[in-house]
Length: 259
Image (cartoon, rainbow, N blue to C red):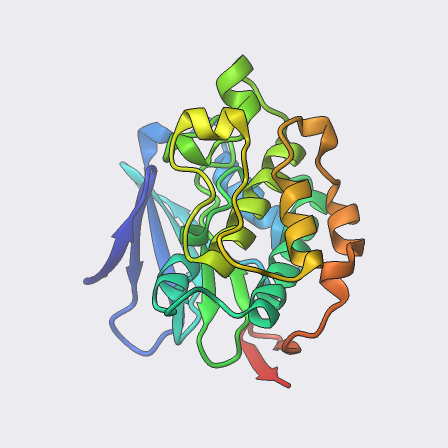
């Protein structure tokens, strides 16, 4: 594997140098549980059965002497959502942000239905197909750790106040951050103090529905945040957006069309 695409907290990602459409993610052996089936593999197997077009699929895996390799489907042409957002002049247009947000929520609902909590839902861990506008949730390497190992200001306020958080309210908080960043091209908070204080600023007008769902997802108290189903039923989710159709054939390859 000569084409190294990047690295994260737990491993490195490589692409095949030929035409084969898959990625290989290498994990250091010492970072995994000493169980016959590593938790990362178990999680990806769970979310792959049944497959979901918004969740990257595990094709195979193997246990080496020092590392474990996860072989996953490869989507092209794709960029991560963070890069996609930063390439826009003032942020993603609201109808497009809605399209992405709908898909992210559906992908997370699928993961939760499979008993898997992702734990690191950020724009860096979401791929965007630049042609079809389909989004794909990636990087399940953090799922076994119920703490924030990335940039701490992405954590919800309860993490700073109590050192603890619950999975679903924390995921909803992350969704609020993602939607805000999509429409404003920046995060709503830049310091721990701002997160704990919870003063949201909306620098330019957006729709009432969009502002409402952001405010609810970024509510200071986790008990005040909506459930995933309440987000799914919110009026913001019913507005106009691009329709993404994803068809996965028997070989696991995805065909996308957008209306």
